[in-house]
Length: 407
Image (cartoon, rainbow, N blue to C red):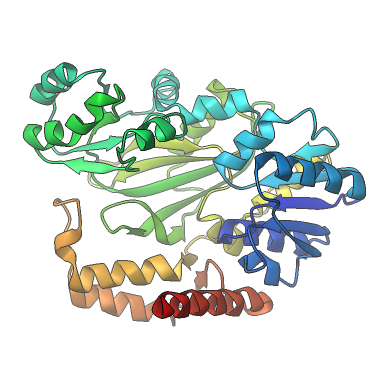
């Protein structure tokens, strides 16, 4: 590596994603400044953080804060975690011209946030897309409801664009919702009639979550990684609470299609292409693309797929990168949702929305305990060589519980 290291700024060190970026960059000698919502952000306690800053209050104030930080640091790489922050920073790209930005521009972000555009590109490159309908009225919903095979899953094509309108009308924005009959579908959609906004209606896909992760530049995949979701929160489907790395030789054809999809979208940077994989048929159905660092990034880090470091070198330093081989069979646990999942299975199975799935209680409990002694078990927050964020997080959670009890 020939170029001198540039400092890095990470906006959003309140989650395991931001913490992982700090660890990955910091272990390679990059001086990292992290910005969190409070001094209690878990990234603040990492030994690899050179400097922690509490986030300014308000969008414009955050931009002012970053501009001032850029003047202080000189040329630096800027990472952002959440879609809302990426949208904010993209609106002010001109003011942030002193930074090398480690996220996609707004046009590319819009292409993956819009599921209709994503699905159209997927069909072009031969990726299976579950039957998906976008209705514009209750009359449309009644017609579609007569044609669909149930159950169906409801999700929003672009949640960031509708969240304010739905909130103003007193309507919920559920990430996903299951309907098991035409009557259930129509009952669920009826409150949205006053807004004229409706979620996508998608056929149910059996199987487990398969995530394929790619670092793209100039139409070339410079790094890839994949995992399967072993457990999710909520149990019927959501985000990973326990995931496992899958070797590069598995699902190789599907990975080639994922790269082709990102190339079709002219994607630059990191992305997660998410599927539902049915082992009974061998088919993978596209769910969505996340055009940012994903929730299970700690697994990639523990398995040796160093996406933040590779992206920093590729886009920040302009170097060519060669991805080292990563380890298959590594498991990573997000302990709070994993524990909530166990409690739901043990005591509240009637609250599991997907009636297609059922869980045996004793095997779930035994598996939860066994993963503590599994040699390749890792954790989203805890790491032996950087233990302080874990205890910092415990302290913050305990304080939150005590405050609620006092109230």
